[in-house]
Length: 348
Ligand SMILES: Nc1ncnc2[nH]cnc12
Ligand SMILES: [Zn+2]
Image 1 (cartoon, rainbow, N blue to C red):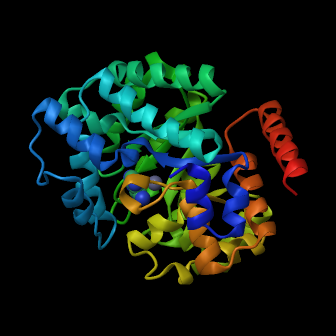
Image 2 (image 1 turned 135 degrees about the vertical axis):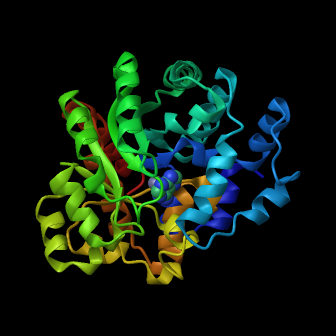
Image 3 (image 1 turned 45 degrees about the vertical axis):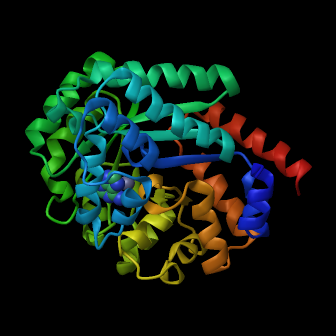
């Protein structure tokens, strides 16, 4: 079926309006965009033994009880990525989604520590990524930035060693981030890493307040000096923090489908994203790990429309927040706003 028909049948009117609207996605782990068919293809190519043999078996396994139960399969999946062609295909598949869903600017989390057990060097990873990024940029003007994301279940010293190894490739990354298991690995453990990254001129973001408490969001802001928070939904537990986030327009890159699939909320109807929006926080919508959580960016917006009654006005503010929160110079943000204005003039 052609894409337009699928959109009309699957989505409500607000999401249909969003489908062709220029948008940004700021919270996307590239390993989390590795879909079952590609996963199986690469596993076969490299002779990697996985506990599944069909797309159906892979998707049946994606039934999570918490963040760790997801991470176990996520790192297993990423272990099939071995050579530059694999990384090219991984990036190309996601950038094709960007083209289909009108994600005109994306900021993608890359986690080189994940590939070290397989002996894959950052130069191999970036060679594959670069080829796909150049093709998408030249092909349809895709704007892409990479975030060098660290794994917080590993010692800080290992993260600093990776930061130093990435010095050779500094120009490829706009920011650093901090991902993986949150509860036992607080922001306070990574102060030297963040200080070193700041000295190198990186923008700073970190996952905080996904499974961890609101105090981790405060700590990420105060101890790590981050300018953006990935997830941050548990800020709702701290009124003073909500006031601070709103007053300072600190962006939260929220991932609704992820939060339900990882049991942060039992149901989408319990999600608080629209309350945060109405309170003046700079919340944005993102897909996190779309291959695992049942939807790309547009499906995340669709869930807000169907389960929370997101209005057109709210949808537009969420899209504008995505541009505001991007790690882009102001001229580039103005160009995105211009594209949005043109779309709105044609599709009021
Ligand atoms: N939702 C998530 N939280 C923490 N680390 C992640 N890595 C990939 N997805 C993640
Ligand atoms: Zn994430």
